[in-house]
Amino acid sequence: MREAKPPPDFPPTPRTRVKRLSDCARYDRETIYAILDAGLLCHVGYVIDGQPYVTPTAYWRQGERVYWHGSSASRMLRRLEEGVPVCFTVALLDGLVLARSGYNSTLNYRSVMALGTARPVEGEAAKLAALEAFSERLTPGRWAELRPVAKQELKATLVLSLKLEEVSAKLCSGPPVDDEADYEDDVWAGVVPLRRVAGPPQADPRLAPGTAAPAYLDAIEIDELLSQGARSD
Amino acid sequence: MREAKPPPDFPPTPRTRVKRLSDCARYDRETIYAILDAGLLCHVGYVIDGQPYVTPTAYWRQGERVYWHGSSASRMLRRLEEGVPVCFTVALLDGLVLARSGYNSTLNYRSVMALGTARPVEGEAAKLAALEAFSERLTPGRWAELRPVAKQELKATLVLSLKLEEVSAKLCSGPPVDDEADYEDDVWAGVVPLRRVAGPPQADPRLAPGTAAPAYLDAIEIDELLSQGARSD
Image 1: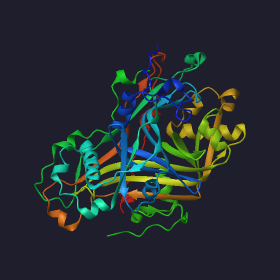
Image 2: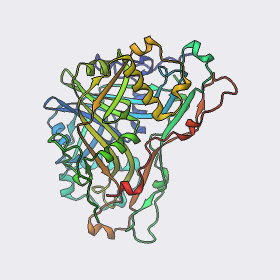
Image 3: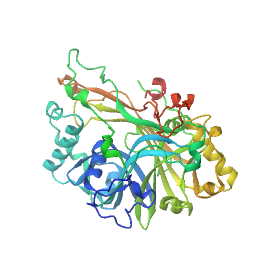
Image 4: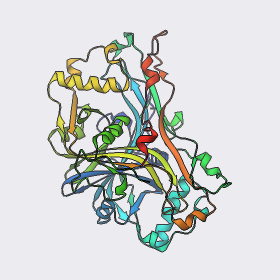
């Protein structure tokens, strides 16, 4: 039984329409935002002299934009600052799907791919606000505990953003789908779920004795599974 | 105290020499293979009509080559089969590094970036051997339990490989490195370790009652932390 898909908030273009496993395709804002808000690491693709490069980096979302940042001296960021086409991809691996044949074995995952041109965030106030949003997303309350960002640090930091316009998602979940004849086979089949977890925080060896561990350390959640309802196809 | 780095097995080129955080850079076979063998998902970058695309997909390594596969109808694989430049990137996220300033906060991770031209694996026997190696890597012993791959399935599957030649790695680990003055600040600093874990296997609802869970399900290890010795900088 297949549920109706949400209507597309981002109409697929020839470049973002999912062709393989199109049942998994989603173009609605709620699904796309949920995937983006569950991840931490994106992979940004760009071209220099005809050669593609793929750089992993941390990202965050604010409204209809995704952001990433780094050193003003970074090759990737200097290239992107010029206003070139990028591909922004996030993939969250949810499980190994062990079917009764190699052919039907696959992965469960959630992914988002966005195409467009990244733009630098201009102005000290806007850059600071973006960096604060990044920090507060993972460790709410920490930004106010840290010393202010130095002028020179802000200058050395480039923040880029990409508007979510040409974007698609894929949601692959659930048990294996085998060829009907293969269900007779005497072999284990199912899903090995995978998730990213945070371990106990490791205090800096130079931390002053008696420094309390803040509450936000207990609440860090990375690549959390979506609720079962949201994941069913 | 910084240990000497291993000598480069893959001499850095202008395209693979790590410029940012070059202390983290590694070009030796042992480090690069260890990272590749700890991961499961790569991100492959390629260009179509000037637009970069980044596709997440499962991969495996055999000797000096990495492999990935998919449907012969896939847009990505059909493009790559033509012999175009690719960027193959693997990133394993190991931790959030919470420094005493936003500027010095960062991520601990291991990554590999390889540039080159992917080639299709030709011939039924070679394709089968590659697919078996992929299966056996994650679930040793399972390949022999599965029914043979059908001729039509093999035909519908494209296997690509990339020789590791122009390749570099980054290994960022350890506690925060703060500005000396900031060590006085009364704020928690340290690392929140992250790792990918496998949960209890979920049997297919259509699994025949009494089907034993195979031993390899208990041994699946994804994104395992390297031993502390191998990770220290």
